[in-house]
Length: 337
Image 1: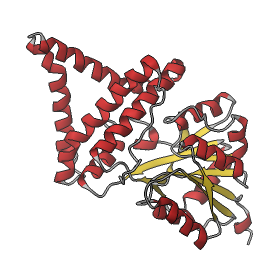
Image 2 (image 1 turned 135 degrees about the vertical axis):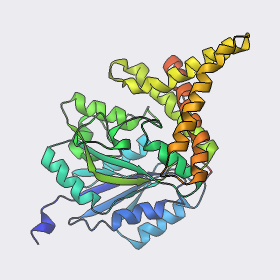
Image 3 (image 1 turned 60 degrees about the horizontal axis):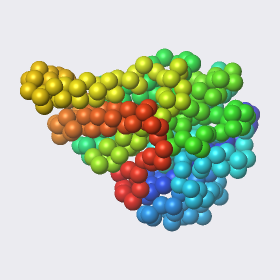
């Protein structure tokens, strides 16, 4: 009985939009945690165009711990802030509707949060796929040559972190900084971590914690996602250049150098093809040496990496130059991916 009362009750929040394919598994991964204290799940429901709302209602009817939170604005940050306001408990966990918690995630996560005194804690985004394309995208997420070398992508030692994937929070830390910035569409997790740290809070990474993440499974959805991500990263860099990681500039510089080379090629200088040729050769080497992928997924890497890098890099320049404006990632709107 003592063990069952030693950990605090939790509020788990999920922003949800067009997640018919993944919502049930996401919620069940939370309900099956066997967390030894009270638990509530808050689903922030955007205006989905598939059966997501119907499925969410079924989940809430079946288990009284599941609560529905309307999010007509369809913005992740707005939905999360409403969940924070409605949360009954002093410790809050963010989960995405296209992710699944590993067994023991909640229990061990709260233990680490209490042990370290952190205000925010995150673990590893363990990207996974089923189709060849999705497997290639998942591989890119976990490769330093895909989406960068952040600890929550590639792993590393436990310690203070730049940001956190999803996050386990002390509620008072969230309220102290005013929650998520609702003017931000993407990159809101990074921005939140910076504001928590600016008030003296600790953001911590632990490789013990893993969350399965299901990335986009369609090429067009992938391009839309990374264009939007790049635009918002450029916007956030524009707002606070001093805190921007140097790795954020790698794809934009690659895009710029490649474009300059192609301009030289257009006026007859054959050496202008070198940047693009060198990049594509590098991609080919990475695809060929991705020994943990089946052959079709390796072939998909040849398209996935350029889609990620060029979409993100071009978007970054747009965001850096004029801001993100009303740019929204619509890659999950009206499609299953």
